[in-house]
Length: 215
Image 1: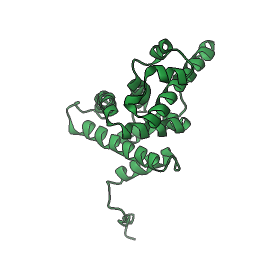
Image 2 (image 1 turned 180 degrees about the vertical axis):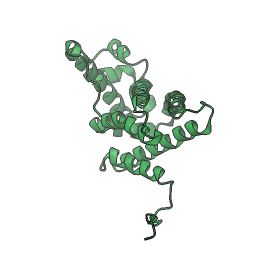
Image 3 (image 1 turned 90 degrees about the vertical axis):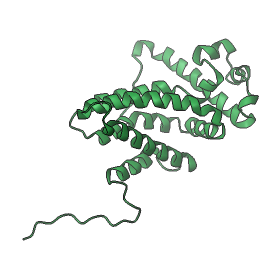
Image 4 (image 1 turned 120 degrees about the vertical axis):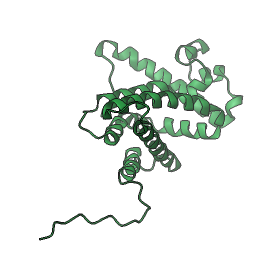
C-alpha cells in the first residue's frame, strides 16, 4: 500500500511544508535526546531547524506536539483504510492490511521514528498525549469493526479485537526499536498478527497435523 501523494498543482508547496515539519520534529527530538525534555525550548528547536519561532507554531501547537508527531492524523488514515477494506476480508486480516500505510511511513522515516520512540520511552510525561490519541483511534476503530462484522458497538468482539491488535502492533514496534530497526517492522508485525491468528499458542507448540480423510 502506498502513501497518498499530494496533487500535482500543490506538490512543491506540500513537499516544502513536509520538509519543514520533519526538520522541526527532528530538531526537537535530537535536542531533547541530548539535553532532556525540560531543558529544551521552542526557540532552540526553531534555531536548530533554521526557522523562526513563529514558523514553529505554524506547524506545532507546542514542543510536546513536535516530539510525538501528528499521531491523530496517522491514526485517522489508518481507520480510513480499515473502512475501505473489502467486506469479504476477515476483520483481523483487514486490520493488518490497513496498517500497511502506517508501517510504510514508519519505515521510510526510520531514524525519525526510532528516535521518537526512544525519547518517549525516556520521558514518560509525553505518554498522556499518546494515550489520548490512541484512545480516540480505538473508539473509531471499534465503530468500524462493529459495522464490518455486523454486531453492536458494545459487543465484546470489536473492543477485544481492537485491543489485541493494538497490543500486537505495539509489541512489534517495541521489538523494532530494541534492535534499532535491524528487522523489518512489517515482518515483525506479520509475526505478531500470525501469532494472534494461530490463537496465541505457547512457543514451541507443535503445529497440528492437517485432518486427513480416511481412505
